[in-house]
Image (tube, rainbow, N blue to C red; front, side, top):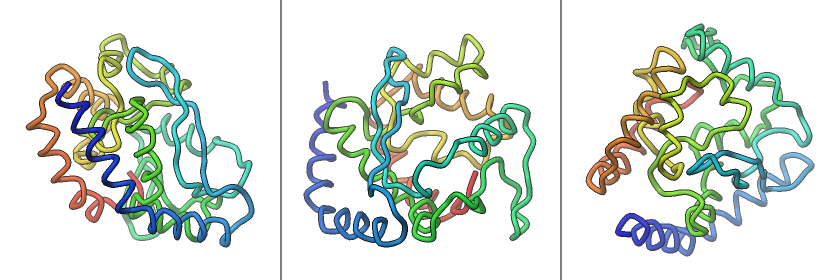
Length: 205
């Protein structure tokens, strides 16, 4: 109950304070490329129930998700690719599908801000596991499914500590450990660590 109260208060205040920024970002997305400002996608939440997640669109309209699927497969196998700056990642912002403004939105994580509406609606929490795509479950082991015991989050253990993960198994272990012992204090710690993590890990995972 306390977690839900915190989610409602933080998301409501954030949406009010950030409303001008949300409007500016939406306008920039529309100017930069054709298509809607918001991107809607079906994700898997608590109890493995589907819900529609909201994000600012960072890719050209109506492109396929083949490269993302390949990135998850690489993560599952622990195989990284090298970016032009020498950084080795599973998924990179050097993707021809990503728009000019989309690269900035992803690096700064501003594309995630519309998920505050998901938090306010009760589908997500401020802190929790990354909301999963349905097809990703094909790579899950039985114990990975414990991550669905709690609501997915706007930020969470994987988002903060992803540099420590060598493969998909490591990423999901972080989520499962969080799901097994959630606490308000841990949430506050992860919130505090989110901005430094964004600055440190910008450019892909």
